[in-house]
Amino acid sequence: MLVYIARRLVYVIPIVVSVALVCFMLVHITPGDPLVAVLPADASQELAAQLRAAYGFDRPLPVQFGLWLWKALHGDLGNSIATGRPVLSEVLRAVGNTVTLAIAAAIIGFSFGLLFGLLAGYFRDSWIDKVSTSIAIAGVSVPHYWLGMVLVIIFSVQLNWLPAVGAGPGGSGQWGWDWAHLKYLVLPAITTSVIPMGIVTRTVRALTGDILSQDFVEALRAKGLRETQVFRHVLKNAAPTALAVMGLQLGYMLGGSILIETVFSWPGSGLLLNSAIFQRDLPLLQGTILVLALFFVFLNLVVDIAQAAIDPRIKRA
Amino acid sequence: MTAITETAPQTAPAGNARGYWSTVGRRLLRDKVSIACALILLLILLSAIFAPYLHLADPYQGSMIRRLKPIGTPNYPLGSDELGRDMLARLIYGGRLSLLIGILPVVLAFVFGTSLGLVAGYVGGKVNTAIMRTVDVFYAFPSVLLAIAISGALGAGITNSIVSLTVVFLPQITRVAESVTTGVRNMDFVEAARASGAGPITIMRVHMLGNVLGPIFVYATGLISVSMILAAGLSFLGLGTKPPEPEWGLMLNTLRTAIYVNPWVAALPGVMIFAVSICFNLLSDGMRSAMDIRN
Image (tube, rainbow over all chains, first blue to last red; front, side):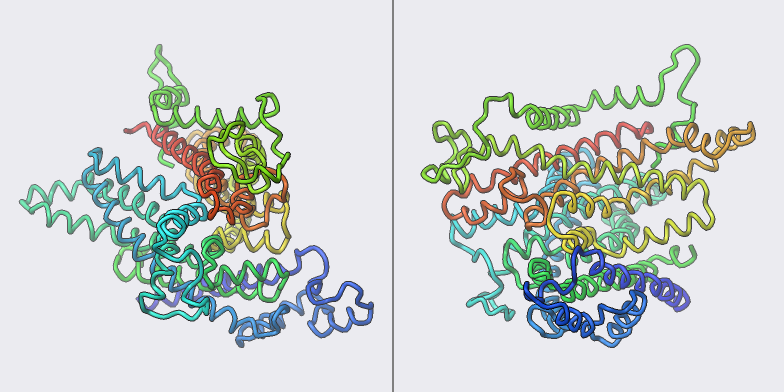
């Protein structure tokens, strides 16, 4: 197992460096000067040159990348051009809110996904299967930002039950675990959960169907096992793949939260990204994307290791 | 992906030769859901293309006194938007840009991804390593994040949004194409072609392309649904289409403030995105099961 973990860790290093390179290059595919947000329109040539030197934009690209990476390794992602505050602290504060949202959505999405998927796979072609697959296909096809709007229309505008935007009373952005805060979480979490719910349902349904059609299930039944015990075997065999899919989905929820956070003004990394884009705050854009992508890489690593831990066949491959 | 092995010519008993693809076609035609989805998509597509001949109101012509009329107002069958423009006309005209920015990235990614994957899978070795390791890097980003990152860096605009979505789907299609190609490469008929003196280009074009295109095509149709949602999403954020163009994602964005006045009109553009997205998903599912002859 330790050898497997070590090997996976070694594989991750080139990925991390490449991810950093992509994030670094983002600033350089931008049309125009990366300083465009801070430079006044009538800035003199000298001022522009001075600022460029101060930010290090006058050096050759590989040198810039090396310096940037070295600093990033030490937790220095530069300062936000718009606010002047360190990028890393801004990002980490926002990521906390995104994690809260993603975990709430994961609990909802994965439980329903597993439930629907197992039922649909077990009672294939029954009405339960048809209902579950319909819900699943709707879940993966719905534009979630629109679903968020519709939920706001129903539960905030028409019924006035839940708040439409924000993450807490007074718009403080400070999260707390009480009903005053939780009611802000309900609609965004449900909206975020529909895609993972649909994908988990579809995966688990297919898995269950495959496993049930294998010979060993026949053997278990012939041996006289009760149906609940057969079901336990199905669960055990479906677990590694289901776990991998759920891990990936959790990563998508963390990294792809920008649309939902924009709809609900949820003060997470997505909303931060949104403001970085529109204020052309490139260090903040770069830093947020780097942190989110590294999160995703790390999560994938954890999922791979967890998968190998519960399924010994993977280690040997 | 199971379909590849079935494309080998064992389907043809002499006399009643029926090709693989015609079997798939017949199975698809019997699938009511797929047919219904295809018809809905065709209807949306044709009405978008022929919108100028449908005697609709001018989708750009606003009216300050007729803003946010509810659904069913005389002359405004689906109401009017925040600038008093006819919603029906804007929804139908909106199909033009929305479908273009949703479908084109997948088409581009299909063309380039299939080529890359074919080369990687067929040539193998260092070429394969170079292509597939680059693909891996893009897999390290969640697709929404990658789309936003590229679009955000390049700035708003239709071209940029198409470019960024193509970059998002390219690695995914390349990976599928590579794995399918690797599967086909070692089959006997490819060996036979090589033994009879066919060059690599001929082998790829004549003997392999036909066998790998099917599964890649089905995978790509499944991506259109995601692409529609993401493309409209970019416009919704203000990174795609610019006003006053009618486009579903952008319409959803500009109508967001109207949810307190006339909520159901504000939700209409999303219904269009949803409809197109779910139809492509169901159609892709239908094709996949039609191609899986074993069932």
